[in-house]
Structures are given as structure tokens and as C-alpha cells.
Image 1 (cartoon, rainbow, N blue to C red):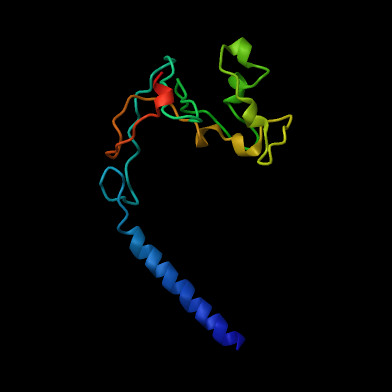
Image 2 (image 1 turned 60 degrees about the vertical axis):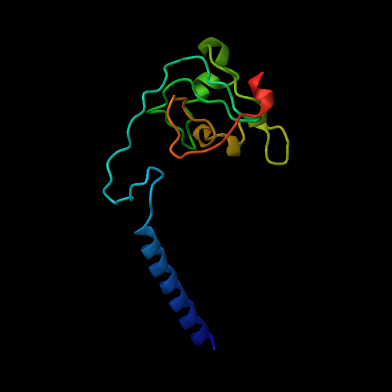
Length: 147
């Protein structure tokens, strides 16, 4: 009985692998071009250097980063963003202080250090750039953000 179950599982894994490979061959980018294994590097956008922040479009939107972050290292052991935005450094650097919410765990308990789920800044915050959307959309900012 165990051999039959193992054989069926092996066949299923093989079929899943084949179907995933077939799907991967037809993947399209948001720009419409097919993705290739040997694609070229992404186009580097011209970020606005230390400009006024672009207004937020919805409540609780993470602020955009008003400067370039190319070369910023954020690893488990080092976070370049905190060298300017931490509570101990922000005044001297003239930077925005990170929010108190970054010190709360998922249960709402306040911690003495930045929460692991908020430590990797670029998972929510991105550099601001005046660029056209990749796909058409009908998004409208909430009324409260227009005032």
C-alpha cells in the first residue's frame, strides 16, 4: 500500500513540475513582452533627488522615499535606512523618524527594537518617481487625501 501511495505522489510531483515549466514559458511582463531567462537589466529611473514628498493617495499608504536607495544594504544584520531614520539618528541627519508602529509586533505589543516584520523597509516603501503606470487603471485617491 505504501509503495502505491509513493508512486502516485511521485507521478503527481512530476506532473506539477511539467505544468509549472509549461506555464513559465508563457509568462508576460506588465509591459507586454515575454520574460526571457537572459533578459537585460531593468531601466534605471531618474529618481527625484531629495524633493518634497509626493502626496499619499490613500489612508495608511506607506510614505514614498524622496531619495535614491541604490546601493542601500538591508540585511538581517544591517539596515542602511536606520542610519538616518532611527529614533537616535533622525534629528542629526534631518530625516523623518520611523513611526512608532514599526516597533509593534503583530499582537500590538510594543518592542524596544524595530519589529522584524517592519525591518525590511523596501517591502513597503519605494523611491518616488514621476512615471506613467505600467498598466491602465481607474484608481482615484480617497476624498480625505485631496484636502
